[in-house]
Amino acid sequence: AQRVTQPEKLLSVFKGAPVELKCNYSYSGSPELFWYVQYSRQRLQLLLRHISRESIKGFTADLNKGETSFHLKKPFAQEEDSAMYYCALSYGRLATSGSRLTFGEGTQLTVNP
Amino acid sequence: EAGVTQFPSHSVIEKGQTVTLRCDPISGHDNLYWYRRVMGKEIKFLLHFVKESKQDESGMPNNRFLAERTGGTYSTLKVQPAELEDSGVYFCASSQGMAYNSPLHFGNGTRLTVT
Image (cartoon, rainbow over all chains, first blue to last red; front, side):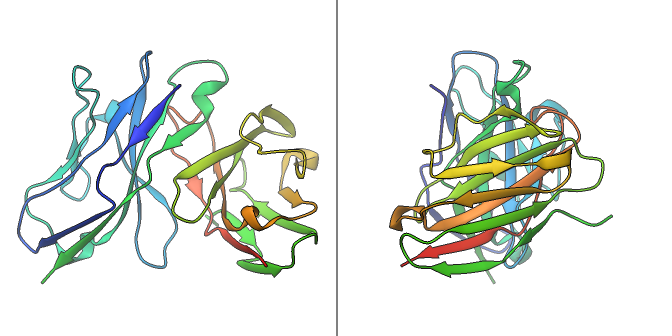
């Protein structure tokens, strides 16, 4: 069965420091990986997905199939990055299962001034 | 465009009572999902509608939960009778395509407390 693990429930860094939020997954097929973010008093929203290979708000994430990881990184954290971050996996292009996301438990990131 | 809206935002009920949650997806989004986060746990998939049809309901915990999407527009999730372990935040999301290639747009969630 598929599983997403975010080993850190809480992560605190200082402004300007690099930040890395860890995500590991288990799935035997070809997954699609995502990062969702929930800022305080806002709804959960997509931050980025591996298929796009994009950088959003300075964040990047590389899918490492060998290590089954999809860590989220930012070289210089900002206070406005403080939020709850969720790593999520989709089964990819499977007919029905590609419609559901499996989430990790989330990492609460706090960026201190 | 208006986002996904959920009602109510909070609900406090007693064990054994019935509660109905409502979700209005973004107009034109055929895909509608229900998820929930129980305290301290991850966000878990409940079910997926494509228009009015249940595409995948494998995440529904038991038969006390009933979801409908009549007419393929808004959806309701009814819990009857509610149990203590049903407490949590229930999220609705919608998308134009499948989750793997189409971002999910989430509502603000309904916080359900069963006492």
